[in-house]
Image (cartoon, helix red, strand yellow):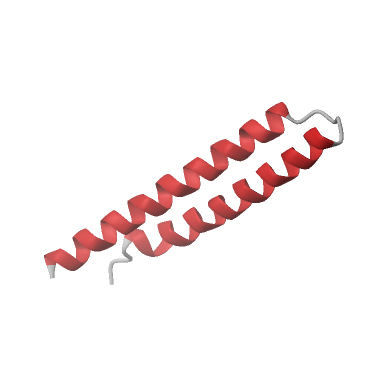
Length: 69
C-alpha cells in the first residue's frame, strides 16, 4: 500500500508551527529581559512559516487525493 504524502506532512507541519510559535514567544521574553534575541527570533519565524507551508501543502495534497476518487 502506498503511503500518502499528506499523512506524514500534516503532523510534521503542525510540529513545526508549534515549535516556531513557542520559540517566538521565548524570543519575546528574551527581548523583554534585555538578552540577545534577534537570531533566535528569526529562526523561530522561519520554523513557524515553514510549518504553515508544509501543513498547507499537506491539505492541498489530501484534497487532490480525495478528488481523484
